[in-house]
Image (cartoon, rainbow, N blue to C red; front, top):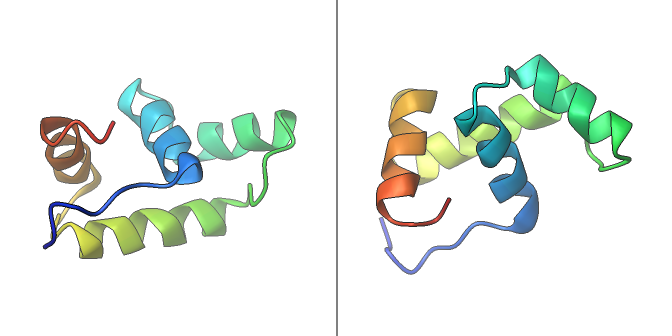
Length: 73
């Protein structure tokens, strides 16, 4: 893993919402309500799975922990 990797604004937004306890469905609804695309549940799941793979996290909780520890979120 490269420590110089960064998150884009869309990824930060998704993770910030998950970090405060929203579900993926809640995040999807938030994005849709605020006209932020893509907002489908599948798009959110795909982005989360890609981030877990990129940062070698097995769970969403471990992903958020890793990224918070690196001050990415």
